[in-house]
Length: 312
Image 1 (tube, rainbow, N blue to C red):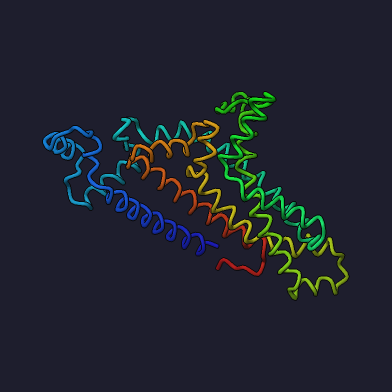
Image 2: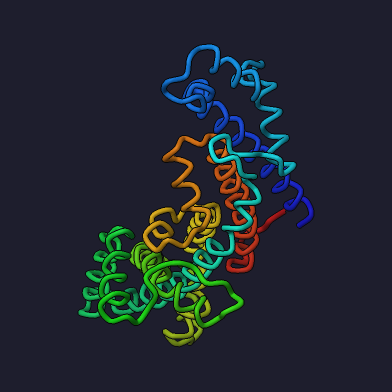
């Protein structure tokens, strides 16, 4: 276990390092930010002053080092907006955290239920109905579902607020503001995850360990719970960890924007729209860290779900 943790730490470090370098180089390829900061009507002298002020004229490796130092010491400021980026992220993060974990629990739980039922009743009416519902869920983009939910359940029926985020200091309002975003974000994942789980369960029913369990006299339900479903959850847990990492890093841009949650995803959308390079870079690094950490947790869960897996 110790060797595994050490390997994961080293792997996480090099992954994050690679992400920072690639992101820095790609965003640097957009050109000198000084031209955008100076405005359309700026002359060469004004652009030069801004270039020198922010160090855009220094060697690329010096710019990279200074940028990373500012980011990881909490001193990175948005060139366009002038705010401290990490302070802004901390302010917006409760909304993103609430959205991601709430929706993640919902879609994982319902995916297991729907996928298992579809596998148990494979080829029957129940399976066909669940397949149609799952495909419909995958087909609807979040912004469309969000708009439908807001119009009918928020505006017409007045059951839920028309967007915004409420602090956990007011639990009932917090819950009411997040119900529709949770539903919007979950529907897409439920459709995809349930189909993956159904296929995996059906594949595992033909494995030797399942036939052995039946030969020992275990009932179908016991075999499903103790063996088939447990091993079939491995790809689902892997997908869940990666998707949660993306969401925690601000990946729910459309959902946050539609419901005006003022989270990290909405901050990312604003930064992309204004080509706020340093803010985009911070959010990309945040996403990379979240994905790497959750991937390590998922690897440990593998061993819990499947005793055949050894961490070394």
